[in-house]
Structures are given as structure tokens and as C-alpha cells.
Image (cartoon, rainbow, N blue to C red; front, side, top):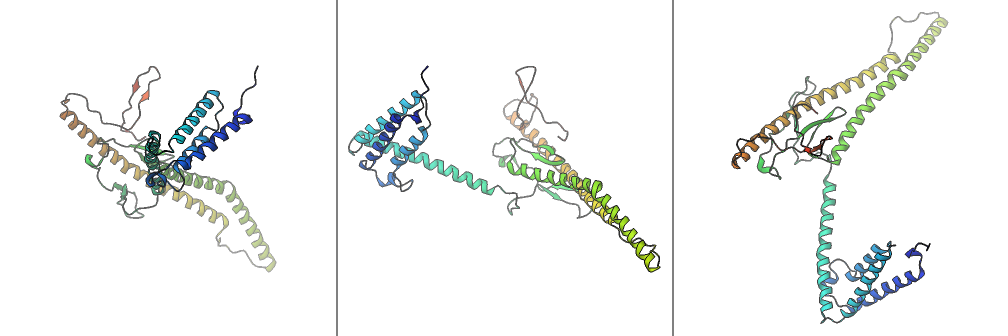
Amino acid sequence: MPSQFIAARSSRHRRACFALYKSLLLQIPHVALPADVATTLGPTNPLKTLIRNAFRRNRRYNSPRLIVSALKNGYRALTLLSRAADPSTAEHASVLSFLRTNQVRVQGVLARRAAEAAQEQQMSTAPREDRVRLLTRVSPAGALPVVYEPTRPPRPLAEIPAGVRRPPTLCDTLGVPFLRLRKPQPRFLERVLRQKAQFRANAVERIGELQDGDLWQARMEDVWERAVARLVASERGGEVEDREPATYEKTMKTVIAHYGRRLDVEKEDMIARAKAMWDIVLAEKALALEEEKERMAREGREGEEVKPKVWRRPVWDKRGSRALAKEPDDKVQ
């Protein structure tokens, strides 16, 4: 059985590739390029960049079919460049046409990357002056029950880019309510939900640690303090004071109660936020139904059942291959 051919370990193959690479680079200075093509993408000659990228892209080829095809393309490019040294030939015109087309493509890629980088830099949870809060607290600070209201009514249909209103869905993650507008949800929303859930989990874990371990240690410390106080009083011939001073156990219970109050306050706040978010969902559903009725009336479909558009993807029925679109219900999810 013949051994497997590995191109990178063949000295003859490597010498042939290096010879072709050097020959292509030696032909580049003989091809005259105008200024708008030679230096638009940088100080390096664009032909040199294309040749280097092609060899780097094909260096891991190990299939004889791919290797032969790449070498044939390289030899054709060598012939093309050698003939393009004369500016009056058709080969020279084809080289310029290809470089200009590639220049437009590269500029488009660079512009798209710059836009994506700018968008990632703008993704921040920090407050912005031009951003309107989703909810506004209408109850006074410290007053119970906590009451929130939507900051503004639903947007008109003209301000929605898609032109079709899709009501959001009220969801929760470990008790933290939020409105799901699309899937997949934004990364910064995942981070905020994860931080809030982690905060509650850490508080609950800390309460458990205080109740199980630290509270018992505080009681033992109080026992020791009382024993020492009795010993000192007996040596001095006095009596132990009847009043009970502040003890370690009381301090530890105060800390546990503080953690519990923080969790209760946050729970009441999240419940109030969920109620206000549910009002937003109901308002969006009502507007979506009205707009769908108007659209069906314009299309002459008054007798059909009105169903608003939803963001949910179709759910496949396990008993068949038919996709069933889930409709939003009136329950908090």
C-alpha cells in the first residue's frame, strides 16, 4: 500500500511552490499601476498582497486535486503578469479591472468591520441622556406598595422599521422580569440578568452561612463573655449587671434581618416592574390587533380571523412534520 502523500514534507513540492512564489513577486515591479490603484489600500503593492494571501490560504492543502488546481492557477497568473508588463495589452487592462473590483470589495469589508466595531463600543448598560427609560416609578421613595408605569405609550406603526408590530413577551429569569423582543436576546441583556440573579443567589447563600455557622459562633462568644464577666465580678466582690448589653448574637441577627429586608424590597420592586411590563404587553397586543384588522380590511379580508404577528419561531409538532406557530397567551411566562 503506498504511503500517504503529505505536501508539506515533500522537498520537491516545496521547491516548486517557492520557485513559483518568487517568480510571481519578481514580475510585480514590471506591471505599471496607476496611483488610484497602487496606493489606495496602503503602501504595499496590491498585487503583492493578493499573491501572499493566496499562498497563505492554500498552504494547508494536502489533496492532490486541490494542489494541482492551485499550481495551475499560479502558473496562469505568472503568464498573465508577464504579458501585463506591456500597458497596451489586454492582459494589463484585465489586471487593472480586477484590482479595481477587488479594491471596492476590500473597502466595503473594511467599512462593515468599522461599523460593527463602533456598534460594539456603543453596546453599554451605562445610562445615556438620549435614551428613555422603559418604566417610571410613580410611588414615592420608600413607600409601599411600589408602583411603576410605562414611561411612554407604544410607538406608532410609522416608527417601527419592519412596518409590522410584534408584541413582546414577558419573561423572567430566576425571578428577574424582562421583555423579550427577539431571539437571540442581546448579550448585554444576558449580562444584566446574570448579574441580578447572581446578586440574589449570593445574598441567599450569605444568609444561610450566617444562620448555620456564624450565628452559632456568636452565641458561643456571648457565653464566653458572660463567663468572663461573672469571673471578674466574683474576684472584685461585686455583682453582675442585670441589664443585658449588646451581644454578638443580636448583632448577627440584625445582619441577617438586613439581608432579608433587602431581598424582600427587591422582590416587591420586581413584582411591580413585572406588572408594568405586562401593561406594556397588553397595550402592544391591542394595537397589533387593530393594525392587523386595518391591514386585512385594506386587502379585502374582513371575514378572516385576526392574528397579530409574533416574534416566536414555529414549534415543530413531534407527531408530524407540520410547523405550528405558537400564539402568545395572557399568562406571565
